[in-house]
Image: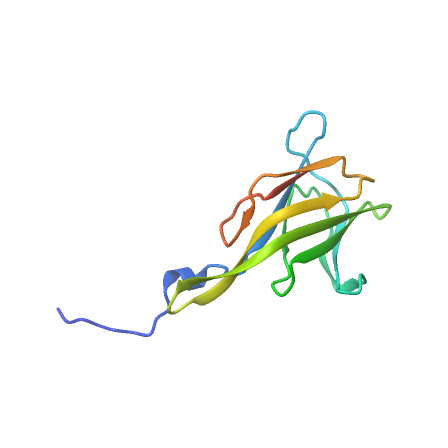
Length: 145
């Protein structure tokens, strides 16, 4: 049996290399998972203006969100617009760290959450559940409504 070498990429390269900041919604009084309807999410640019892209466009029954954090800054600001009536601002403060996945896959950026604060129009409170934001699928912040 001969040895065959190829240039096929490592299996981990097929996975998403983008670290996603994951939010879950819960009921303020019971702590049970909750969902929201008609939620739009905008990310603000460095000047505080909403960027063109809508990260979530009025989907129904949203219980979790996966959002990108800015890899070239230590803060990302999101606007969460509930039912087209109420806006809450979510400020996420973090440190960026490059880490090596493998030779075929290269490097990616992970984030270490420091502080997450919000305005309180619809959001009543929030909890940081996991500070390390990397390519693993896990909830980082729970927003209590």
